[in-house]
Image 1 (spheres, one colour):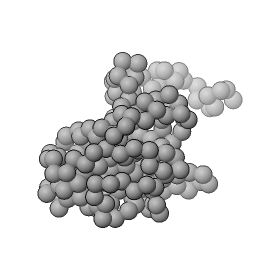
Image 2: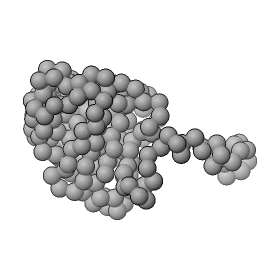
Image 3: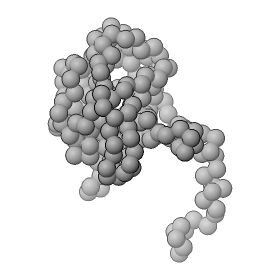
Image 4: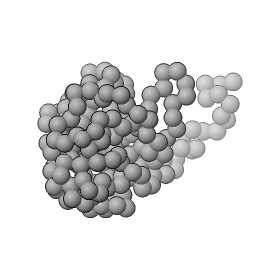
Length: 188
């Protein structure tokens, strides 16, 4: 057995397809994402006024100023509140964006939420990017499907929490419930 286990090929050759599917060179355009750009589809966000939070790995030294989510095939309608937030691994609020209130969100459109204060990450690990939308029709998001945690220590890739949320993010992610649909989030 080698360092690569039973794999006998060249990892660079085997993963080369990702070079054309991936995002820009992180040395040129800083970003962190929770999912690759391939295999994504139209997934539901959460019910109106409910927060959906997704796990994202951030590294020590990262400066996170914005969270971007991309709507999929369904646009938002009669939007009243739209906020994004960043939580630490323990589920405590670090920062939230301003409320985008009734700002339109068309189908297949990226929406960038600027955090009220940029957050310098001081410990590499899992953080949670949250999104809460109150609307008559919550837009669907670009994302994937994830499995429920089965091993001890595994966390949810996506989860819902809260209800009747408006312009203020909850101080903690309280009583999170597993969510099969995992929206893509890009932190910059």
